[in-house]
Structure formats: C-alpha cells, structure tokens
Length: 78
Image 1: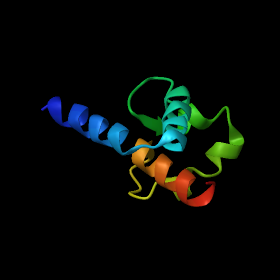
Image 2 (image 1 turned 180 degrees about the vertical axis):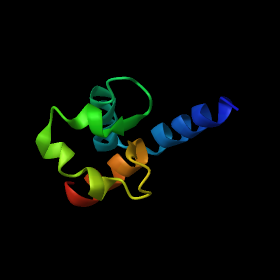
Image 3 (image 1 turned 30 degrees about the horizontal axis):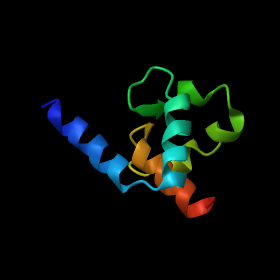
C-alpha cells in the first residue's frame, strides 16, 4: 500500500506549474518531520501561519496536507 502515496505525489507534482512548485518547496520546508503533513506543532514557530491552520484544515483532521496548503495559497495569494 505504500505505492498509493507515491503515485499521488507524482500526480500532484505533474499538475504543478512554477508557482505551485514554489508552494511545494514552502510546504516541504515547514514539514519538519517530513510526514507529508503540517501539524499544529510544526507551525507554532510561525504564528502568522498557525493562525490560518483551521482555515487550511478543510477535512478537520488536525493536519494540513499539501493539497490543502496548495489550494489555500493558490486561491488566496496568487
């Protein structure tokens, strides 16, 4: 079952344009434990991002996926 996250990552990367690659780089920088998700703990050092946590977490699972992060940034900042 480890192939599914790999395929999903490949499909996400293939769908990215240059600005989305920048989003991926930002996400990877924030994802300190490299879990593929941003957690409340990982964003504590950045209060301006932490304040957006609830807005980004669309599925309310207390972690931000790359897709949630990308969707928010591309819809609200670009």
